[in-house]
Structures are given as structure tokens and as C-alpha cells.
Amino acid sequence: MKRELPADLRARMEEMKAAPFALRLGIETVSVGENEAVVRMPVSGLTNALGMAHGGAIFSLADQAFALAANSRGEPQVAISASITYLRPGRGDLVARARKVEENRTTSVYEVQVLQGDAVVAIFQGIGYKLRRSEKKVD
Amino acid sequence: MKRELPADLRARMEEMKAAPFALRLGIETVSVGENEAVVRMPVSGLTNALGMAHGGAIFSLADQAFALAANSRGEPQVAISASITYLRPGRGDLVARARKVEENRTTSVYEVQVLQGDAVVAIFQGIGYKLRRSEKKVD
Amino acid sequence: MKRELPADLRARMEEMKAAPFALRLGIETVSVGENEAVVRMPVSGLTNALGMAHGGAIFSLADQAFALAANSRGEPQVAISASITYLRPGRGDLVARARKVEENRTTSVYEVQVLQGDAVVAIFQGIGYKLRRSEKKVD
Amino acid sequence: MKRELPADLRARMEEMKAAPFALRLGIETVSVGENEAVVRMPVSGLTNALGMAHGGAIFSLADQAFALAANSRGEPQVAISASITYLRPGRGDLVARARKVEENRTTSVYEVQVLQGDAVVAIFQGIGYKLRRSEKKVD
Image (cartoon, rainbow over all chains, first blue to last red; front, side):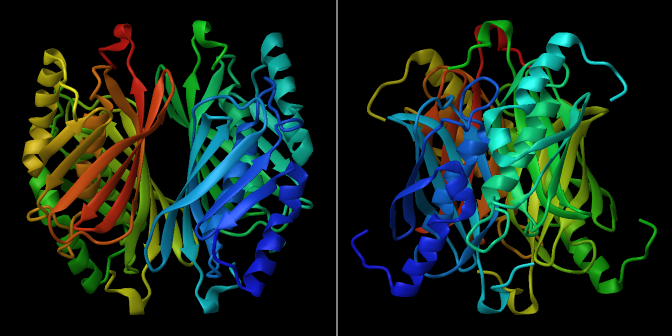
């Protein structure tokens, strides 16, 4: 958080923060630092049949934190895979905090905690793949 | 699909199909059968900064299919955990097809394929936990 | 199973079947076909404190089936990640059956069922990464 | 580590440490504390066709650390599922360090790092299920 990000990276981060899906869900970016990010989301309108945060909404918030953290250093990454474990229902505003666990030359592992106040609602783990220049257009 | 579902189960299924989060994403239920479900979703408005379906949107569609399939027999289940592997970017309308892989007395495993036409966009695996009567209110 | 594998691939398969770890656990290869493999293992000597197959032994059997199946076409692959869900304790001889679920240019998804007779003991999912020529020495 | 474990728990821990599968692989317990455990294993004899630690061996070491940590408080737990991401090949002695990430009344999440010296070889995540008294005999 202390280091100033370069201009092109800041621009890409702004695009990610303003992605249509993030806006649709009301996800706001609290902060992005080197290999870490914090985002938040109101649960209102994102509930399941029981009136609690839908599993997809909880995952989406965590995934957005993962994407911001994994791309925070200017080296573009895409998600290979991700997993989530649900521990408590989410009933109010949720916050997701992403941090890097480890990485090698091609892949990275991030952990995201989804919190409602101090309670851990879910633990997310994302595996990122570092795109080479020749791969920037994935298909 | 051949078997008629009992009235209370049909009512719960209707509540799940009309969950606020599903409506927010434009997820439509194509069909629900015993241990299986098919749902679809337009990608428009659910994209990331690159204009492709956001990973959270793809997961959410799969998760909704999993939830409908796992609750299709009247025995309520909640998700313990889920994982997703992304194989191709999603650019158009997506369909998710859930089927049961295996189960025991307390847990179940479902696989969901997320498709764009014939192409597999992602493979989702969900682990369900069968609620006992005394647990119907989770916290 | 019907197709004859080329000689260099057959040689590599033989090395994989005879890997020291596979011999240590008593894993035998039943068959290897295109994108599929079947292996078996006695549980005797591989138990946990409760006298049932150790979770690590069950995973190892599945992982060996995954490795054989993913390398069955001559395109070398390494595991990026894998997950396993345990459904029933393993008490006798176990068989693991691997099959390809899906793949793209760089990654693949395999499912392995670990069986004791007809009962499913565990469901394993492996994600493979296709090595390019320049990457054959991973580090 | 500071707290003395009760006698029956110490006895169960000793059974887990001396499980046939752990002995077969040469896994030694370095320490067990409240919700944490450290184990180590030589790679010799546990290699794949490339002479590196077999993925199953790496998982098994991590799984043993998870099992010891999750059962370290006298409340018996079994693994529902586990996942592993491989980051570097293991060539020498490996150490696995397990710690609790989070838990609720029925489930727990543990992270295990598998290390060769200071290098992280793999990240393991285990989900435990807390057995009730009536469930102590799983089937």
C-alpha cells in the first residue's frame, strides 16, 4: 500500500474495479496493495431463497479481491481455478481480504477471507496463471 | 424429469429459482430433475475488465445449478464447499448442467459443466451437506 | 485401450508404473488407455490409526491413475493441483479409475473414482498442465 | 505446544503417529500443538519416474500433519475433503506444517505448507468434519 503503482497498472486496476459484473453486484474496492486487496459488498438484493447471501455472491466478492490482488504488480494473471469453503451464513455487509500465499514462475496461490464484522463467512483459495506476452489473448 | 415433484418441494424449488441473486444475474431455470438441473444466463452486463464473463458470474451460474440439483429430492442440502476450473472464456450466453456424482448419508458430490454452445467454459464441483431436522437453521 | 501406444510413450509409461513410490505402496497398473487408466492397491499396511485406508494412501492411488491417464498420449503433463472428497472408509483392496473430463491447450481436468468393489470410497479431481518443450525441466 | 495434552488424547496421538501408513512412508512427527502439527519425511524411495517426490507422497505428508493438528484438542475429526497445489518439485527431505485457518461447530479448515528448506513445495488445504458421539463409527 505504501508503494505508488505505475500509471498503466493504475489504469488497469481502475478498469477491473469498474467491471460491469462488479458494479452489478455493488462491489466496492476498499484498497489494493502489492499482492493484496480488500473489497466490500452489501448483501441486500444478493440473497438466496433463505434470505442469506447466495453462495455465488460470496464467491464473487472473494474472486474480485483475488483478481485485484493477483494483478496488483503489473504482471497479468488469470484464474486457473478457485475453491471456497462456507463456514457461516452472510447476512449483512461483507468484506473480502485477499493475500498471496505463495507463487512460482507460472502460478500463484492466494487466500481470501470473507468476513461479516469479525466472523469468517468463507475461506476462498484462488490459483492464478501468469500470462506470458504471447498469451495475452486467451482463448 | 419424468417424476412429478411433491407440492412442498415444488414450492421450495420456485423460491430458489426466484432468489433475488438469481434474478439480479438474469439466471433462468431450464429444467430440474432428480439430482440434476439445467440453468442459463446471458453474459451481457456480467463481464470483467476484458469484456468476458467474470469468473464470479460463471461460478454463480454453476452454483445455482448445483443448489437446484442437490435440493431436488426434498432433502435439504447446503454447500460445504465448491471448486471451479476455468477452461475457456465465456463470451455469449452460458448454460450450466448439474448432475450428482456420488453421495453418502451426510454429504454429496455434484459436477456442473458450464457451456457456451458445445464448448466447456468451466468445470465446477460442489460438496453438499445434508441438513438434519435439528440443523435446519444453520448458523 | 485398443490403440497401440508408440514405443517411447510405452517406455515412459513403464517408468511411471514402476516409480519407487508406486512400488512402495504396492500400486499395480491394471490398464492404460487414451486419457484413461485403472490401477489397484491392497490396503494392508497402508492404514491409519483406525485400521482403515489412510487418506494419503487413497489420494496416492488416485493420483497415480491421474498421472498415467494424463500422460497416456505422449504429451507430458504435470499436476498443478488436485482435490479429493472422501465418501466412505476403505477397508479392502481399492481400485482407481481415471478419465478425462475436459482440456484446453494448456490445462486438463481429470476425474478419478476410487472404488472398493462397487462402493465409491472417494472422488478425486486432478488439474494437469501441459509442458511445452522448453519447460520439460520444471523447477 | 505449551499446554500439556490429556492422557487419552496423548494416547490417540501416539496411535496416529505410529499408523502403519505413516511408518511405511517414513513420516516422523516433529511436534503437535493446539490446532497445529509439524511432520517430516525423507524423499528417498518415494519418488516418481522423474526422481522427484511423487505427488501422492507430498499429499500424504501434508495429510498426516492435517490429521494430527485437527485431532489435537481431543475432539475427533475426519477429513471431508482436501486439495493441494504443487509449486516446486521436492527433491530432499520435506517438512509439513499444519495450522488451523478457521472452524465452525461442524467443520474446520486447515492449511498445510510443505517445505524443502525454505522453499514451498506445495500448499494443502484440508476440510475436517467434527464427529458427534453417535457418529464415531463412520461408514
